[in-house]
Image (cartoon, rainbow over all chains, first blue to last red; front, side):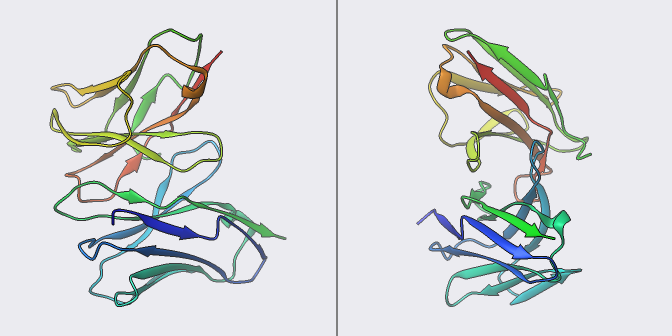
Length: 112
Length: 112
């Protein structure tokens, strides 16, 4: 019940295309869902996050779509650029538990 | 720059040895987390401290231990090192544990 399942494991997208990464969770007590971006040799950095009271959050080219009933959330990267090539992690948190539960990560490659 | 510092940046040691990794959280952050990331793997949560007290424990081996000091810096001690302990070790900090985690640049540990 504590798992967050992330797919796909890897993704190749053409420059200008839309990258979509999906995550699913079981525990309905989760109430904070962040996405982190990690470049090789660097620590992860928060990209965008959402709480379950909204169905979508957009920040520039990055959008989180949240489906509470399906217990799924996804990251969409519009107009994907080579600089977006990185590993992306979804995560989930219960405010009462303080521990982020991490997805396994998706290695995204944007082809020029 | 996240404001989280980790030392050393690289560490090369032999099997059976003991090492200490150090982390200084961002100014004002009370919570410190330790993660292990093996090559091309996801983030494995090890342990979390909040204001000097252990708050959550993940997949931390008995050979590993950590503490958070009164000045809020934290140390991760790894002993009886094995080849499989070679990994990137990240420290992250947050204000309280239910907020964004800011990651340090990591310590790359190589056990020969």
